[in-house]
Image (cartoon, rainbow, N blue to C red; front, side, top):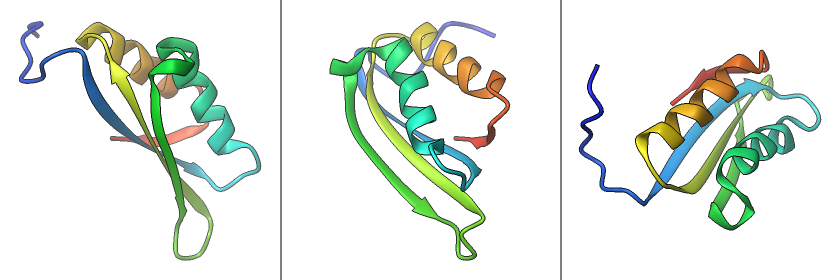
Length: 87
């Protein structure tokens, strides 16, 4: 694996995080991103429930400073145990 990327940092970076549609899932996701990126880096947050409302997709767009920055957020979300899928 190399550190090369097609992205030019800093950049606007959207993450789509999917989990069970439980109370506070969106807030939980936003807090993890905010912990790593800072409140000022958050640009947009949208949510959409699945057709049967069992799952919730939360899209968080933030200003990414580097590939390492993005990797740390991915890892924190993956390690949480509440995230089922992450794009």
